[in-house]
Length: 90
Image (cartoon, rainbow, N blue to C red):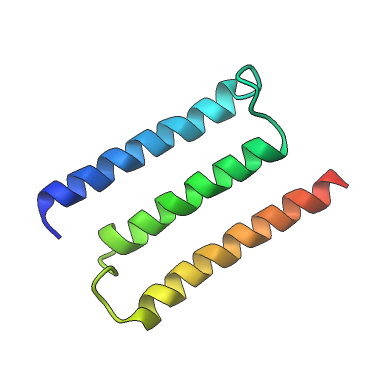
């Protein structure tokens, strides 16, 4: 991967970080709260994690097994967070 692509991914990560911060700080005032906010934050976190795994960890060009293993772990953690949130709502 070349420097320009990494810079683009880095910029996307910065924008995504700003979005998650904004939702956390003023999301309630913007009408984003509760489960919609949690799902949005979880989706953004998953995208950020995927970008880090594929581009900054360099797994984009490796065998599917390694990509699948790390992204599967990311999916598992995300699912467990969503389940814990759902249980806490009851």
